[in-house]
Every structure is written in structure tokens, then in C-alpha cells.
Amino acid sequence: MRRFECASPPPVVRVHKLVVRSRRVTYHPGMKARRIYLDNAATSWPKPEAVYEAVDWYQRELGTTTGRGAYREADEAAHRVRSTRERLARLLGVAEPDHIVFTANGTESLNLALHGVLRPGDHVITSVVDHNSVLRPLRFLEEYHGVAVDRVSCGHDGIVDPQTIRRAIRPQTRMIALVHASNVTGALQPIEAVGALAAEHGLMYLVDAAQSLGHLPIDVPRTGAHLFAAPAHKGLLGPSGLGLLYIAPGCEQFVRPLRQGGTGTQSDEDRQPDSLPDKYEPGNLNVPAVLGLGEGVSYLQQLGLEQVQRQGEELTARLIEGFSGIDGVVLYGPRDARRQVGVVSISVAGVDPRVVAAMLDSSRRVQVRAGIHCAPLMHRTLGTTELGGTVRFSTSVFTTVDDIDAAVEAVADIARAMVVA
Image 1 (cartoon, rainbow, N blue to C red):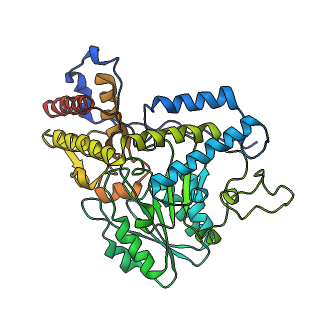
Image 2 (image 1 turned 30 degrees about the vertical axis):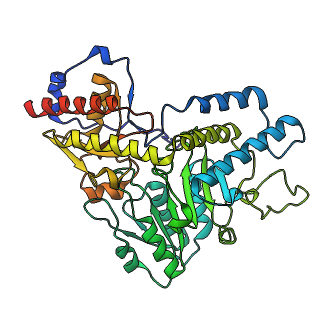
Image 3 (image 1 turned 30 degrees about the horizontal axis):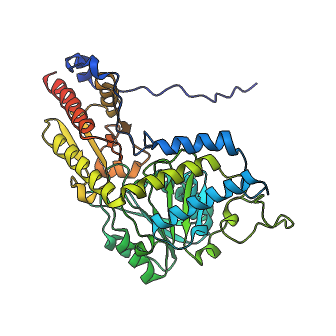
């Protein structure tokens, strides 16, 4: 009988030979209890207290679905969900809350946009800067559905020149899909200029705002985006397991839903409703996450996105300045806090980034992301693939100057140890 092996052995971590003498890194036992979390590009932590309270309150007090009951708690749940859509609409600068569709996560939002719009024979333009949540659906559509894909390059600063996109446009081009901020370098892309290109050529335009929404003011109509996607759990400070896709009015006729099912509306029909948001939201919503997201958005609006952006730029500038003065550290991306969000990637003395990340956590409890960050084309462009990617530091509204200084000091200790060894 044939035996199927479903599990693969864990990958072997190639430790640089210099790491053998890493005991030279200064160890501060007093720091061990303080968690310095700088992995907010993966998911933000901590959340505002109101986010935790909203999720707990829903589970204990409401505990019901939306659109499927006529009793008080069901009405309250529906009201709270509607309130979250309205807060998001204000945040995005749009007038149509019902055109903000909730999904399972940012990845599903992007899949809905890509699979929902593209058809065999279409051509789409994306970039090497984009995340696998765009690259992988496009590769699938390319291999199985006859969709042609161009992946344009970027400059040494990690920023795409709109003219490279212009040159890639063909008669068959249907869509431009572009990330707003790189999850590797933080580099902000010229989404408004690209939106003008899309409008000039009558193309559908998808913006992936996973790393930007919640970190700086964004007026979606000004970007020209027809489809605007983001997760709840990053800059928006909401819970995991929720995403959003804004579909500009009129564009829903071009976006085929990926799922069908019960909505609690038009239940006497066996066809999916065409009205939004029901067209794209079959089944039960993740209501506790929606309520938590509403509180995350409210918190950001109380702070003011301009203030959030200023704080992020100050912290990012401090990281860049600190790392720039350390021998053996290489910085990637714009190296300019005004041209990137709070994401900074480095390498340290040619050491495997996973080793560096482990040392940061064990010595100072500095928690970062190491590796390819689901952006393989970006690393090929940066020349960091063979190294195993980069060490990524990412901030949030709860990051402090002390957190930044502790991270820089910890990296300096590791780099000194590598150089001496």
C-alpha cells in the first residue's frame, strides 16, 4: 500500500558561522520581562482597550448574528455593524458605507477583487513590490485561466515609477493592481499617479492598503482606486479574521462574487442578491471582529490620522538614523521617513535574519519579523533572497521612543559581536 507523507520535516536553519560566538552579545536580564513588540506589519499589538471590550461585550451580551432576527440583540448587532461601516467610510473619504464589504481577511479581499474581475484573455499589471496575496492569485489565474500578467520592477529605493506601468499597458489590459506601501521596505508607491494612468486608459484599479490604512490619511476617491483592500488587524488596530474591500459605485457589476449563500435578505429567492453588501457577504459575519474593528477605527479618528502619521514618521526616522550609524548593518528601501510607513528592513553582518531575530528576542525581548515576508519578488530585487530575507522592524501608534532606542541598541550589540567574532 502506498504511503502518503503529509508532513514535511522542519527546514534546516543555516546559521552563519559567526553566530557560534554570539555569547558576546550583552544580556540584560532586567529587560527580559518587558516585551518590545515591533512586528506590527504582521499584526498590531497591543490593541486599544475598547477593542478588547467590544469583542468581549458582544460574546457575553449579544451573541447573535445580524440580519436574521427581529429581537433587540439582533437589532443592536446590526446597528453596530452598520456603525463600523460608516466609520470606515469616513476614514476612506467615501460616501457609500454599503460599498465596504467585509471578508475573512485582507487576502480574501484581494482574491475577491482579482478573481472577481479578471477573465481569460485579460492582462493585468502588478509590481515586484507586491505581496503574495496579490502575486499568488495572479500566478494561479495566469496558469489556469489564461490571464496574462506583467510584474513591473521598482527603483533602488523600492518605489515603482508610474512610467514603467504606462509602458506595460496593452490593448488587453484590464486591471492595474498595486500595493500602497511595501511590507518589506515600507516604501510608499505613487498610487494617485497610477490611478490617473488607470483612468486615462479606462482600466480597473486595485490598491492593496494592508500596510498603509490606519497609518496615514487616505482619500480613496483621490487615489482613483475602484477596488481598495485592507485587513482589520494591522494599522486599523482591529482583531484578526476580518478584512474589507471597498468597491466603487458602479464597479460591482464587474466584480463576480466568489461565494453564495444565506444573507437574511430576499430569502424567498435562490439567487444571490445583487444589492451591496449582501452580494458579497453570504453566511454569518464575524460580528465580534467587526465591532472590535469599529472601536479601532474610532480610536484612530480620535487621535487624528495626521497625528498618527507624524508620530510614525518620527519613530521611523529614529530607527533609520540609529541603524545607519551601526557598522555591519545594511538598510533597505527609501531611508526617508516621509517616503515610507513605519516599516524598516535591515540585514546584520551577513547573518541569517532568523538568527538575528532570535537573538533580539532572547537578549532584549525585541520582537521582529525575519525572512522573506511573503514578498519574494521584492527580495530578488533587493538581492536578499540568498541571505534568507531581511530583519523587519515595524511600528504602531503604541510604539514608544524607548522601544526604538532599545531595538537600535540591541542590533548594535549583535553587530559588534559579529564584527569582533
